[in-house]
Image (cartoon, rainbow, N blue to C red; front, side, top):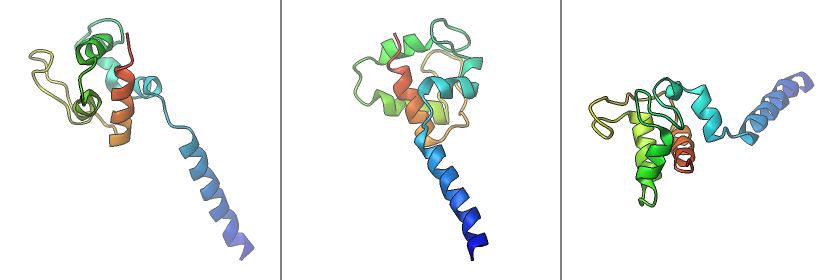
Length: 104
């Protein structure tokens, strides 16, 4: 019985540790393919993230719209170049969108 409890306790401990540290927007940006097309300060293939923040400043629901673009991709928002869908969860897309909106 005790031998069966040890792995269970280990799994529970590991799960609680991973939920304690939620990745920041900047950490997610660096760990996902975002940087291939975007930088914070300068236009690359896609717009500079500070420009995305400026365009959406004060826009109601902007975080949800941006999260949708991050997760599902978009077309025609910043010109002819489409933004592909990205391998992020809904929560990661929300964190990224909220972080982008804080950039100056």
